Image (cartoon, rainbow, N blue to C red):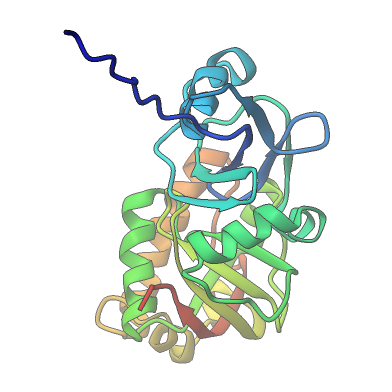
Length: 252
């Protein structure tokens, strides 16, 4: 005689899935006043629901999530994507206070649980491309780099914010992955011709000499001058930034 067997069906409770989509400077993608979110159909995984809805809502597929958090009936996933083109991109220092749940995910999943001393943050990477950014961030994490140099005219051309003493920054690898947090301790301005050995030593690159520093920065800023059409000379004004490391991100 056949035996009736009950079929076991895994059912997920009704949920809402949220995508915390950040660009490489950690601006948050906001659609209609909130991060991208979808209702999760019965029996479907929250991440799969986001992935299914992304092409129609965002015009592209989602990247691999970097972190996740479930809070009651809400599932949150964090992503970094350098090709965000739809919606509003809200700077880190603004969305950190506007959106508590994404901020909690950011702290737990992106900063390794570290609580910044302020939400008035910026995220950036050294150099102008990921390979160089990773190399320079390596010097910061290993303790040899405690300074950096910006070309004032280039910063103004690109619309970058000027660094100020006390500013807390999230340093990334150039792809948007946070590596450490730094705090600016001092800012000085000088012509390229007048920059001295202190900044060369603080930047911690090459052989630490002023001659090596001048050669490396002449090459780098010369490339940027060719790209932008802004001439770089011995009289170009620089911003010399000195900083301390607050945290190298990790989980214990």
